[in-house]
Image 1: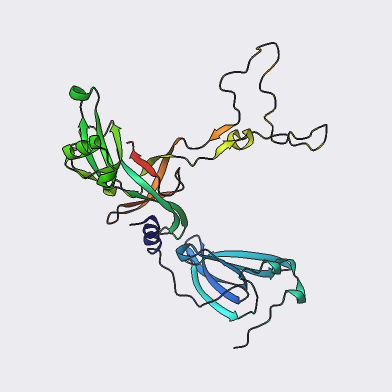
Image 2: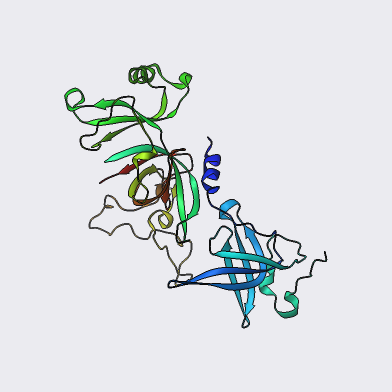
Length: 117
Length: 209
């Protein structure tokens, strides 16, 4: 077998939870598990998706939000067992796949037009 | 010691039971065949000779064809010798070795040929810091090695002085890499971290214990 097919063979072993389709510009809420000592609890993190990166089991997505006037970004691996649920709150209209320009924008300028379905 | 010849497939990541993401390198380990047993009486030293990866008949020299025919195996691309193979091993010519000789969780060594970097300066090759200053009379010396020796004594440059030159493409051994997973069906072993060489290059995976 070729190198590439052997690698995908290994990557296919990683279980990927079913997720809604979302892309850069969408607003999502990620519920993820936090382990404190032996206890496990759920926490929600919602913000705008800046990018989706990679493919297969190693794919990740970046979510940005403004918390107490400070920009916070979190990168989630799509196959991470700590992700409980991803909910899409809003579909945004953006022209590129990676919207890093959002980092320089604040307040009213940082709004993203919502897609009407 | 026991070992095997393998092929670097590439890197990816897997999750362990506690959910941590672990970077791994996938190695296709075998199946290798034993082509010769060297003994003190006949060869002057003890070793077992192992071969890996199929080769076309037309690409094999007559001498090697004879050698493989004697062992009763098809021509192989890579032939390596392992000295100090497990004490009291019962390996016979024609026997196959595969990924099942390793155990999940144990620590192994991987030997490979690092990627060639071509002719590199001292900053890249030896980690020199170069000249950091923009002023104080500096110009065009940003990545220079500085002085390589003193004056009338010793009147020469010492042997082994670190200078610019060919970098990489040398034998590198990574020691104590953890085996994360073994796929016996496809002869794959997953090793934590990186290993030397490009994807598709041959490596030796060995265990000392």
